[in-house]
Image (cartoon, rainbow, N blue to C red; front, side, top):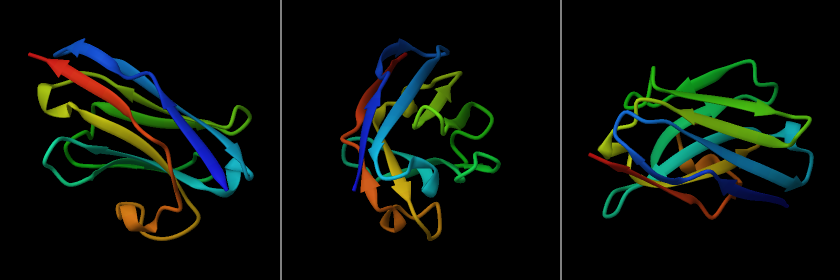
Length: 123
């Protein structure tokens, strides 16, 4: 089992920044690729970002590319999501997830999920 706890969400004005953190415990963190997803009310869960086990490769959803940056610190068992130039449409609950294998844009391929942290961007 891997337990994931997100933090860092909150209310921010459009154009502002937030940094989300996801702390992992349980099994060896570096055995898992990590992803961030988000879900807004009445919308499907959306892929945001992915980072490989070593942190050497990353990928982003089209809607956040160039604005968000995912990173990880395996020594601290933590993955981060730096969010810049936030827009009202970024408002959602953000989830981190751990993946042992599979396509990183597909939420069904992730093995463990956190409970999420709310991000609200005001216009």
